[in-house]
Image 1 (cartoon, rainbow, N blue to C red):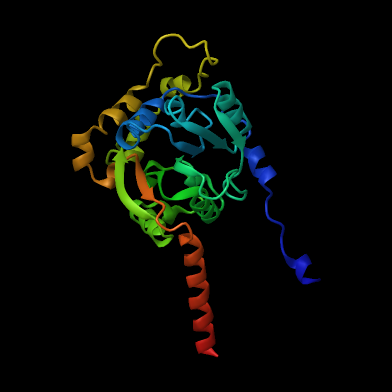
Image 2: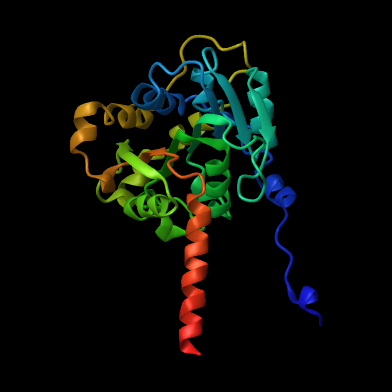
Length: 278
């Protein structure tokens, strides 16, 4: 067996896209409260910027920025990209784990990924790509869910809030602030069945009306409204991160080569350690 024959083939981006192809076959309204909270707390008054968002298949935050900015939505889901196009938002199908983002270097002013990193097979590839496409000094907004919610992860330890902050700093980002959103109560495993009732699940399974055919205000489940209310400035200031539903990380792309330098430092250190052992 040759060296090339001994290497197992990696799962292709096409196969990963097929797993998520119908992810947004049902598009929900209830995330919009969180999106509006993000705009209010991180993007208020943003105009004339080039803004990109990965994982925007339900309209994302960019749907609230499109009138005064040049926005672009990316998603791994075919149904998500189709919905973005219905909204009139420039969009592309891309797997951020393995494919290059469809932008030139230093082209984006603001880059966003909310509740996406925990889905990625290769988060480091995504970090390198977003550093490449964001201007030096540009803003990056990321969020990850609290592991206490019971969310499934490929890399569980990475998504502890402090560990993720350290991971970002190690890759050369300046972490300006970490802001909690929502609330995970104590004894959540016992409370969860009382929250995600059959009625709540049925409500979540209802599709969003076709674009242009929405009537009235969307109905938000009680838990969604409580998460939003618990993210008012007073509660945000006193709430421990461990009780947040998720955390939003505001970063500056201080060093566009930060992730590359980290990789080189690790490789160089291991090379020196191996040489010392010989």
